[in-house]
Image (cartoon, rainbow, N blue to C red):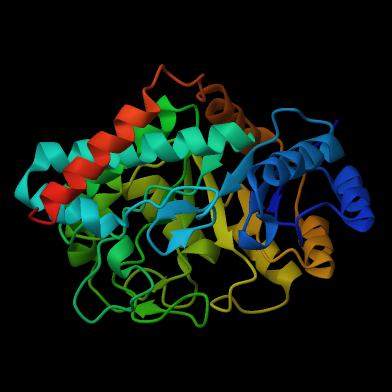
Length: 340
């Protein structure tokens, strides 16, 4: 059966009859969960089952944004809290080995939480490098303010997820850290020179180009393409993301319902594919928009399908893991980072 090249959210805690019919007909490649889809573990696991049943694919990817800090869709009382990226950055600055270990432990624990529910993909790690004066949308989510440190911690996070049987998504390629606007609300424009971008923002993604999937930034880089954000810029995708950075995995758009993008939902979807995205992401669970995305999404074929199959084949079973011991170790390292 054919698969369409988009990822969709749904509206609530269970599938509605309309959503089930839509999914059966349109057969998206994958799904993404948000807080509106989360109540308790048994409910989430059942929703994941319903989603896969609707498209008749037991291995259909189910994504979530589970970073820790202020971006954590699974939260207490049913799931533990996790630190933001800035906590690893602070610890790494004092003790790089401890910072790396804490980042790995946190993502390995997150992977265990996700695996319990059947969730197979986490929208993590970030490789965004913030600068003074940038919008706080990245802020304490970042792993530091130097590319080398960001790369080291991002690698630890990606390995922790992979060791737990969860695929990582590198974001927001080729960099959201310098943006002075929140792309959920408006379109950020970065007026930095190409040389400086290659030294900083882009440099944090290049050593991570082997990761299986990446999510684009809804950011204009005026020195390269003054007219289109990276998500809908064929120039940015060909010359920077696939070119200078060298990323050859599955490239998915950030959410096409975000206000940074212009035009109708169908036009945004078409523009992302025309620019070179393999998969389009739509998150808000509004069925009329979901239908528009589906109608503008091609079947998953050709090089996009080959990239997707490579990514899927790269997900392995979770390695043995002492969950309780890992949490104790993580808490001890974080206490060290706070100076306790």
